[in-house]
Image (cartoon, rainbow, N blue to C red; front, side, top):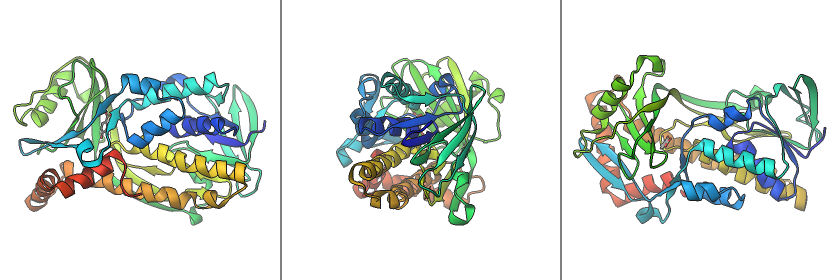
Length: 390
Ligand code: DHB
C-alpha cells in the first residue's frame, strides 16, 4: 500500500495531524498498536491551552469540547494555609478549557472515520525502513498479515516507548532527562466540584491538585511514591490524605464521593534533540515528556502538529523544504519553554525528600512572590495559558 504520510500512533498528535493533512488534501494512514477502545479510555490530563482549542476548532472537532468543556479564567495556588488566585484572563487575556484528553481522542477518531480516513488498530511488529531515502516505508503486522506501507514521510507519534525515536541513530541524537523521585496518585470520583477553579496545593505532606471533569465527576491527584500500588489505598485512606493536604486552606473542605478510578503515574522530564532524521519526524511524547504539573503534555503534542502541518503543506503545495528542515529547531523552542515551566511548577509545589528547612522556605518565598507580584504572576499565567513568547 502507498500513501503520502505514514503516521505511527493514534494519540492526539497522530490523529490531529492526519485530520489536518486531510483538510489540506494530503493523504495519510495512521497505524496504532492498541485497540480503539483502549485509546478512547486511557485517562490522561485535561487542560487545553487557547492555541490547542483553536487548532481543534479549525480542524472541525471543537464542537463537543465547547459544549462540554469548562472554560476557566484562573486557578488557585494554596500554601501555608492560604489560597491565592492567579487571574489568567486578567493577566494574559486568555483562558484554558478543562476537557479530558480521551474525549479529544474520541472526537478525533470519530472525525477521521467520518472522513473515510485510514486508521489501523491493533498493529504489531512495526518497523521503519529507508528513512534516509525519499521513499521510506513502514512494515507491520495487521490481522495476522505482514503489511508494508510506502510513503513520502514517516511521522512518529508513538509515544516515549514507541519504535520511531529509536530509529534515529543514537549518535545523531542527544537525550536530555530528569527523573523525579515522586509520582501522582490520580482519582476520578462522583460528586459536585469542590471548587469553581483548579487548586494546586503545596503541603508539608506533599502536593495535591483538585481538578474537575464535569458537574458530576471530579479529578484529583496527590503526590505519592511512584513505586506505591493503588491496592494499598482504600477510599478512606485517599480521602484522609486529600483532606489533610487541601482542607486546611481558608476553611476549604473537599467534597468526598465514590471513587471509580485510581492510577499512579511516575514523573519525568525528557527531550530528544533532534526530532527528525531524513524523512522521519517525531511529534508529541515520542520526542518529549513533561511532568504533569501544568498539564503541558497534550498541548505540546498539538503545538508540534501545528508546525509539522505547515511544513508538510509547504512541501506539497509550494515545493519548499525549508520548513521541514527547520522543524526540530522550531518545535524545540516551545518545548524547552514548556519543559522549564513544568519543571519549575513541579519543583515549587512538591515535597522534596531531604530538602533542608532553608530550601523549603525558598519554595514558600517563591509562591509568595508568584501570588503577590503582578510581574511574577504574569510569568506563571502566560506560561500556563501557553502564550509565552515562543
Ligand atoms: C489536570 C492535570 C494536570 O496535570 C494539571 O496540571 C491540571 C489538571 C487534570 O487532569 O484535570
